Amino acid sequence: MFARAAVRALNSQPRLFSTTAARNTKVVVLGAGGGIGQPLSLLLKTDPLVTSLNLYDIRGAPGVAADVSHIDTPSEVQGFAADKLDEALDGVEVVVIPAGVPRKPGMTRDDLFNTNASIVRDLASAVGRVAPTAHILVISNPVNSTVPIVASTLAKAGVYNPARVFGVTTLDVVRAARFTAGLAGVHPNDTPVPVIGGHSGTTIVPLLSQSAHGKGIKGELYDKLIYRIQFGGDEVVQAKDGAGSATLSMAYAGATFANALFRGLNGEKGVVTPTFVESPLYKDQGIDFFSSNVELGVNGVEKIHPLGPLSAEEEKLLAACLPELKKNIERGRAFVESS
Ligand SMILES: NC(=O)c1ccc[n+]([C@@H]2O[C@H](COP(=O)([O-])OP(=O)(O)OC[C@H]3O[C@@H](n4cnc5c(N)ncnc54)[C@H](O)[C@@H]3O)[C@@H](O)[C@H]2O)c1
Ligand SMILES: O=C(O)C[C@H](O)C(=O)O
Image 1 (cartoon, helix red, strand yellow):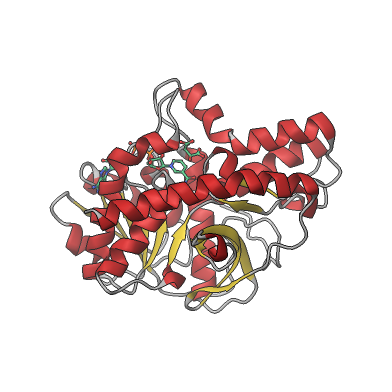
Image 2 (image 1 turned 135 degrees about the vertical axis):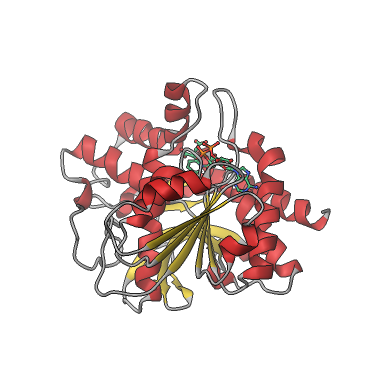
């Protein structure tokens, strides 16, 4: 069904579904009945590295599971109703969380905080209790705050391992490659663009200077491309006109990142992609979470790569990113502390 790309080296564009060998991976999707959850569950069902797929939501997961389970791939699918969260988490190695409300036109991701913070905290708390060694992939917005919420919730329970908590920023990487390829007139596979920082507006920092085809884009075209990558989410929110935000491209991005993690857990070397994790890069400025190229391995986060050389424009983008990111992270942390 999907082109199987060869093992990707540093800075190459991650693709669905690269794999080198079979592996048993038990995965759960929390929020599987939603706009992202449904197509993401479909894609995970077709991932050859997934052997068991549990689908949980406060509504609709058993129906989605019955549907997806008919797809003729080897993995076993089970659906879990609202009161069966612990059963859904039992024995899982990877937890993917797209649960929570999406934006409507005029809203920022931060406007979702009041609803999604407690959803994510409560799910993280259940993961900490039932599957404390699982890897957690956070999709629910605002990612800049929900990842610190997951980390602080697990820390409170005494089970936090920073190598196992990931904010999924792959959609920014997917958009950067697609938009840059469109301008350069080349294939997106040939235009990987590292995207660093966080996942909202100006905290999204694309490093076009590190992209073979991006580095030649200058002036007004450069400004427009950066804006489009940073505010790609708004483009979809406006086009959907009140019916939500990106779901299909996000499902693709989520399945792509999950596959990269499965490959790392499988022992494959050189699996490198940007993700929002606890990071030493800006800790000296009080910023404990940051997205950058991360090597994924058998323990989750294997190595956080240095950013590499930045252009003068990128230094400016980063200067605008850091204070906003710091605020978002602190908001997430404070929420758990006061819970
Ligand atoms: N990280 C990213 O790049 C990215 C991209 C797109 C969307 N998102 C975010 O993903 C989230 C989901 O978006 P969507 O379009 O799928 O929304 P949606 O409303 O279509 O689906 C959300 C699902 O979560 C479920 N849910 C709510 N509370 C739950 C709980 N406590 N436990 C389990 N399930 C629960 C709902 O029943 C619903 O089925 C939003 O917060 C959105 O902003 C993130
Ligand atoms: O824009 C949104 O609210 C959803 C998501 O974060 C996106 O980037 O599409």
